[in-house]
Image (cartoon, rainbow, N blue to C red; front, side, top):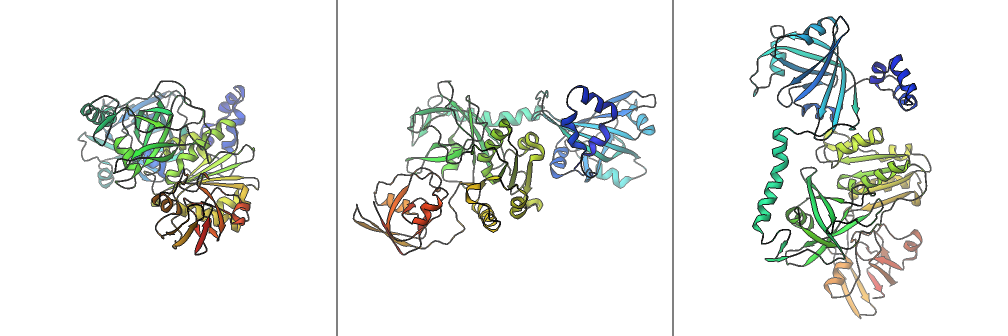
Length: 530
């Protein structure tokens, strides 16, 4: 579909300049397809509502342009509908350069800046100036009650086109309020750290220790960012300041957490940063409840804290073939998928990214993905009645497409059903789960352990692995969501109910192995070589 901005901005002289400078072919794609209606989407509307200033360009009858800075309280530029903007003109130096220009040429161009996040939106439109006496209701709609500047008139802009600029050459700048908001979490962390007995230590059950965990890789928390109201990003660097181990897209890190009893356990989080980075990794942790591993990370992982982990594992790698790729993420599942998108972009491979979430506000990395991947990204916010469509996505993909999915079990189940319906081969799609499948009914079953000579009951609300651990049986495990194969056990009798994402089709059909962390039994009894 052609972009409306190209029809306005790509004049013959502009096209000639593109040709001379070797960018004509790259820009020609903006002009192919049916005419586009320039309607502001929810991302544009949300961006506009957050601005407290913009730059406005007009042209006088003598052909000279004039650029004016327009400022006011945040949100003074209002979206009246998908094609219309409006703002109240506050009294200024009374030169009326823009007003005079618009009286003879209604065309206007705006640039809206988000300096902290290095974003800018360009808007082209036609302006109607409305005096206060002509439309008092419109004035009331555009007035900002908390801003007492005198209003002279209303400026109504009919949007003809818009375009997002790349972040290149935008220097981050921050308002006083933004600086205070950025510093407040750090100030709170500093106050908390000052209360601890030694800098950089972790207080565990009342005792100060140098690092949490017992792995061979010591890391330090070097950054904390609030990505959404429930998701916090943690930057990790090597404690000795050196390079981190090389990783590939899809890798995850098992970080230490402490339970209520003081026992140190591990929680697995995908490394969401660029896999080529060797200076730092980032993990994103979603807080769903006030206890558990995620709550511990949110509460205790602070700047300067040291943790000890084992080097990252990867149970969800990108395959090496060069065919097209479709990436599908739901909620916090974007953490694994984001690193894949970055790796695919760097290798020049074709891909699409579909990202679904409860709301735009709840979608971690949304803005960054939007401006990095552009049309290759599709967003689906449930609160805006935007639903991801498995049937359409699968049907539109070329036959040699490989699908990678990470998200809640409801999303994965919907796509699995569609893969089966459209007969997509099992080797063309890969799934990573961040929790066991909860959309199934569990039944209790019994297991007999040949070597241990024990018979155990597995209740409906516990996994086989949990029952083995409670019985003191040595049972290896790692991911605990059926992805890594570490908890694989040999089955001597009975029929397993396979719920993992690791076993091959042949291994499933043989009924001779089971992953104890997620899988159960179809038969009432299993006999294990354990």
